Length: 337
Image 1 (cartoon, helix red, strand yellow):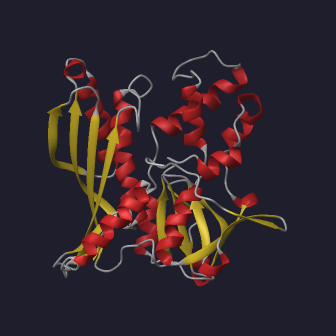
Image 2 (cartoon, helix red, strand yellow):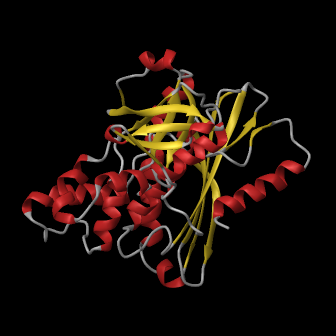
């Protein structure tokens, strides 16, 4: 049993209990949605990050970690087409970490990103842990009543899009694991800037809040999910909830150009990282053909790319290259395999 099987079990248990009329969406999406009395819905997301599982202190400066913790949750809110408003942050650190500047710098990074999107910290907790740093991030957003975007609205005939480029974060992680570090100039001169940019894409991701708002408020996306586990896995999540299949064109996947530039010298596979790498925090979404012409060219300087088409569930989840199709297996991140 992996964590997705366990989550599905929890979901079935929760749905057996008495339903609450104010609950619009519960377990199974990027965030829960609760109906407000003022014609607005509250969208809630929670993320747990554990040292040496989700991050390593030796390569994650505390300011960048504080930024990333919030970015992860903002990405979930964006995937619901909602506007982030409030945050609750709980932090547990060992005594030796408490006695450094870690906590102050961590919150500086958190507030730096929160201020950009006018997100207010309204609560949380601070505790001492035995050995590892533990972070629990909760972000609340809002949208017009009944207008959140879920994972279950895609229909055959819809076109599939992604924001930005994929694989950069995973490439940055690979480089960190091989000894690269921020500010290092040990690489070839031609590679230095590309390596540093890729490291930052992993350590300081940018949530697509602007795109999420446009897709949600303009009713352009029929279904949406953020790419946190990897495209191959997250497209399976979206298809499962919508009960559809897809065909993705491999040549259309926007692999990060920096990865392509380093691939030969650094043994990085751009397509595999784009498919399976994860933590890009881009948005994967479906759009009805009638609405494609309404999509902006860019939002906040970020473009979108059409990568495939939604099919009936019986068609499966396919990766296409020329005249050949393969079953696309979910090879992204999984906590418990």
